Image 1: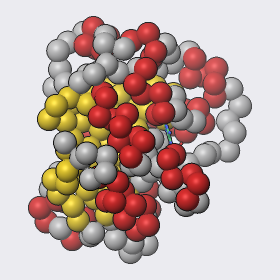
Image 2: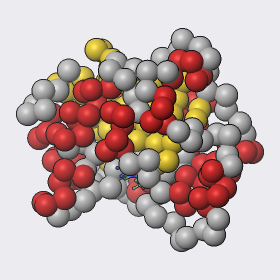
Image 3: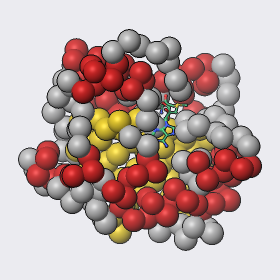
Image 4: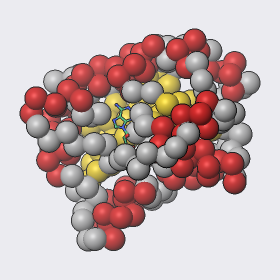
Amino acid sequence: MRLRNVTGSREMIADSRFVVHEPFGNKGKWKEIFGNDRPLQIEIGMGKGRFIMELAAANPDVNFIGIEKYSTVLLRAIQKMEENELFNLRFIRMDAEDICEVFDKGEVAKIYLNFSDPWPKDRHAKRRLPSRQFLARYDAVLEKDGRIEFKTDNLDLFDFALGEIEPAGWKLAAMTRDLHHDEEMLEGNIMTEYEEKFSSLGNPIYKYIIYR
Ligand code: SAM
């Protein structure tokens, strides 16, 4: 998701107290930064932040970080936080390729990937967020019993993601090819912006939960 260039978005982000500006210096220090011992969950590619903001509001006993690559998109999330501040949520503008420089081994309790970019060309497969290259990065930062939850409406991306689980040393805990009609997996579901858009068009939503 890339929004039209918003003039001054970088400057507005640089001034925001909801953004962690030097994330690379915080590896191993996230409990200190949040000022408590609560578990840390992250969403990678959060877009405008609807999902993680609703999740953070419903779970005050958990710390959350939303990661987004593009300033213009992140800006929308910041604007929402200005209207409704959440003490347990912060944002980072970065490429998720670098997460091992930001989080220490076992520092993250759970990772959410929602409607990740499909990168349809084979030569770009390693850029897909559920690829084995990214699963190796998640393995390096996720706690022992940590899980990854992945949702998409893109069948090719979902099938690709399923095929990456075993070779990367992960295991499938649960999956559905129609989340919105799967009573068990739908329980507690929080819709993302893309989920709302694509499910309203009648597209099925695919979801898996994996662990290792
Ligand atoms: N998760 C939101 C949702 O479900 O509504 C947004 C989905 S949008 C298709 C994917 C988002 O992931 C975009 O905002 C994009 O900039 C971000 N993204 C893609 N690759 C990323 C990466 N390597 N690091 C950080 N963000 C990334």
